[in-house]
Length: 466
Image (cartoon, rainbow, N blue to C red):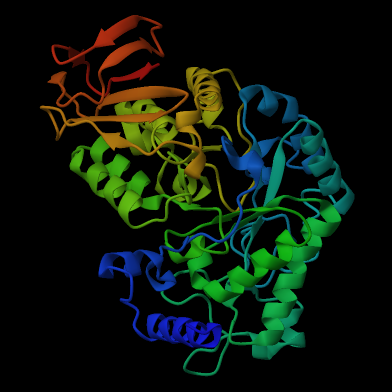
């Protein structure tokens, strides 16, 4: 056959194969190779490597020391380093509005100048010195950022009144439905506002060397604004972003971590006897099925909002407090410590006035330090995709006892919690938990198998490590 005819036949066959997708392939094979059917990663941002086993610590600068300054707070850095925390979150550092101010000193979330430093805390050089000192000890610093609203007397109110939302009368308005009368809402339909706010956030990363932000009521600000902010911040340096919100879409391109508000609510209601362990099953089910794998959730038993407006962790959790603390570390999530928890602070810190923490040694501080060491040396307990997923271990007391395993090639953790006010003797199902362990708190060695049962006091827990 002439070579020209062979070439024509080959070309014809190629055209047929292109025109008829089934040529030479089964339907299943076509689906596998078709890019339209390939799973795409939901999270497109890159978490900083230093966040993989980090613990976050919140500093309320006004109450952190008797002086209430950055320089005074800096003296605590060696103690915080010894405690083992990694990310220091400073509550808003900006000058506070005076018009319609609440209380004597006002709310730090009423921002009068996004480029300024509250003189109550020091000046720019004091802040920069704090950041540099934290970096020198291997810790990172993130700032609290309030993008949703400003103080009434922020200069941009007069310079750009078009950047603000209006009520039905045409007046500036606070965030609707809340009693936040000391602030007025911004309008993110305005491109000029978006540019201004983004440049202000870039400024503190570039000039002060901070490592990211905790963003107040992040869900009240459009996601596409945050997505662009993250790109511009990462162009300066890799940052860590925490959203005060609970939403899947914030994880895709903007935030490394969101609040686990519903975890805290479920634990509180269990501790108060209003619900049982089924509330945690709901939380962990949603966390695994709805939130993207690799996104981080912040678990906590206290923060500035909880402490000031709803009660201390002792009020919120009672006899279940230490069990809740332990679960915040060994379950999925990055744990938060609010300043004063390690000292067993039992007072609601005033929000609009000076109310210094009384520092002292306390068993809860020792427990936190121990849990931090456990987390850092146990890769299964690390954050996001660096850590292992929680796998439910069924037991015969499902309404009272939570039991699960987290394991990776480096080790295994089997955790059991009696989240009830009565003693429980519990047996476990299946074989996931079988093996030889050391119980973390007692250091007792044990082998667990189908014949094993545990007796737990009210609000008791065991953390078996292999």
